[in-house]
Length: 358
Image 1 (tube, rainbow, N blue to C red):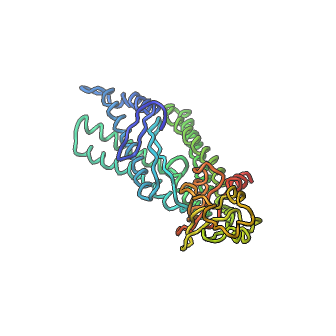
Image 2 (image 1 turned 45 degrees about the vertical axis):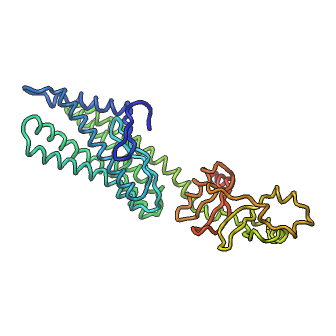
Image 3 (image 1 turned 90 degrees about the vertical axis):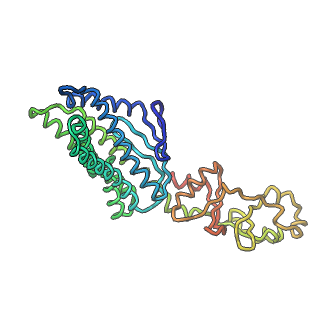
């Protein structure tokens, strides 16, 4: 994950702190140094401690996303902490908006919980420690509320996405709605910053950087929604792309199987066991080598090849899983079965590619 920087694991999750994340810690320490200056204390030292603790809070925020995703059974590939925060990469395996909403909310909830804990710690401490905890409480409160703003790429964008997805039934429309909401937030934030500066306020460079970050992330969400829409279209077509096969017993005569095989409709001949479970596929190269007069007297079994596990997939509630399984085989064909291994047909890479192009 990422190039350069630090790589480690927390709670079993890979975590990356690239150079940009390290620069973020240093930038926060530099900007906060004046706030911690005072008699008998080093503003720079306190600012460094504050920056490190703040980034640990960001890690806690991302861990909340990761733990929640894992609770839904989603594989979590890792966490990256960078200049303006962090992000968690996980593989969603659901077609409902509910999990998206819960995972999105878990991060801000963790940050607000941390803000409350820091506020409580500030209330029972004094001096430098009180100052440090108070700063962490207010900053985490600000980050928690900021992340709840309803627009991508903020966590609040996940709420917008889930709501639009729920209403329209389209994940792509949800992502696009969250993206447009994020663009609006970025524009309003930039306009407010410039207005405040023109009216005598301080020029808040970080606020403009944040607006640019939100705007770019929102634009990426809109772009990805177009790709998602294409995949949604393909997903609905996948079951119809499965081509039928002829299922026979491996003890049936070769000639009888060939006579029953409708080559205009059925892509292949496969053998099944007594329970109807998929075993093997007829190897046409071997069949072609058998003289015509011998075919009625030999069984299908010896002229088949066992179908490897990696070339089989079950048609479940997520048709796009078949596309991923087909890609994983790096071959032109995937044998599709029911959950009890009864053959449904085959999915051809050529058919999937044609559907994507259309």
